[in-house]
Image 1: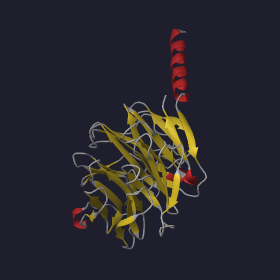
Image 2: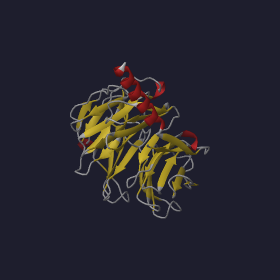
Image 3: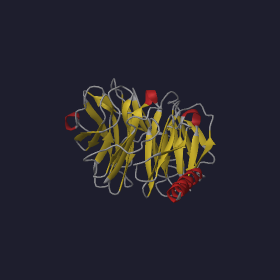
Image 4: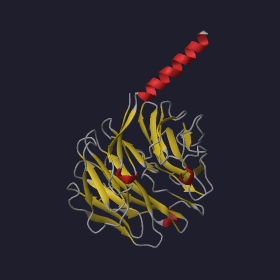
Length: 334
């Protein structure tokens, strides 16, 4: 009886702990699919999405100011990076691919990069605090498409194709949440690919990921790292079968040199993952939200409400999620 009572007590504790964590919908109804999300601190957050939409909150997500970027009403802004309430960079994905920057809270935008090449498709941006940034796109001519900046996105330089790694036919990136590329402080450029093959890119080295792959809708969608880049988690799966739990997550404990699957993975396809704080991660996708409290080894479902992107404040504790229909939610831990 005692072992049974102990097991029952642990189960009740786990259920109680899970219920103490909540996902609260803050905003819904705008006719846009939000995939770009940047949380600056516990007050300031920006989102971007389809139909040229950009949103900004100055009160932790409780209220939002919305705008449609003039001249870009049909653009899909799949990623956004912000530094404060006035300064942000947005990325429009395809033909032409655009990157725009504002320094007055979105009242005016300046085009800082344009590419009209047939087939161009930008997928994600990531910046370090002191101005360095990277933007990755689907391969052109079989090679990684990459842009770099050293001035917080005021200007961009494309990496010469001959200096970029070769990707296989059918291997690319997903512009699902703007979170499949990372820059580490020491200069390492990381990314995860998907499609017919799913791999981890560490500068110019490519390593296989144990995620579902082989089809046009399979593979990795998002990557997060902590512990000076020694610990990493990638998520993905198959967005065409978003409740399939096969190959939805992978873990590395040695800086990406080797990868393995968790004992209990996320409950379906996940397009975004973020490290929250000691050993805790949150992941979201079109079929729901999951939480891990042990570094990604086990995942518990928090909600079946779908979101495209999740992000934690660069300075602070605020965690927001963004999805289709202009939906924005806040995750509150116990």
